[in-house]
Length: 69
Ligand SMILES: [Zn+2]
Ligand SMILES: [Zn+2]
Image 1 (spheres, rainbow, N blue to C red):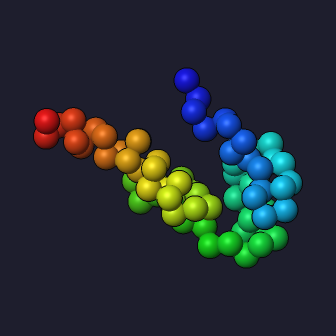
Image 2 (image 1 turned 135 degrees about the vertical axis):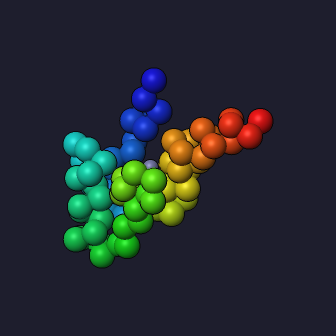
């Protein structure tokens, strides 16, 4: 069911492991000064733009697309 639990909470810059994705976001922002991107649909935060786009496609756009089919 949960497709986001596969090594999602590992920092790819220093290989540190975190309990949650939120902790990883916090670490990336403060330790590596990464720019965090936010989902415009629900406010969820992501380290990578591609992760945000994937989330928006999976969580938000799919519902819209189904309606037009
Ligand atoms: Zn790190
Ligand atoms: Zn969202």
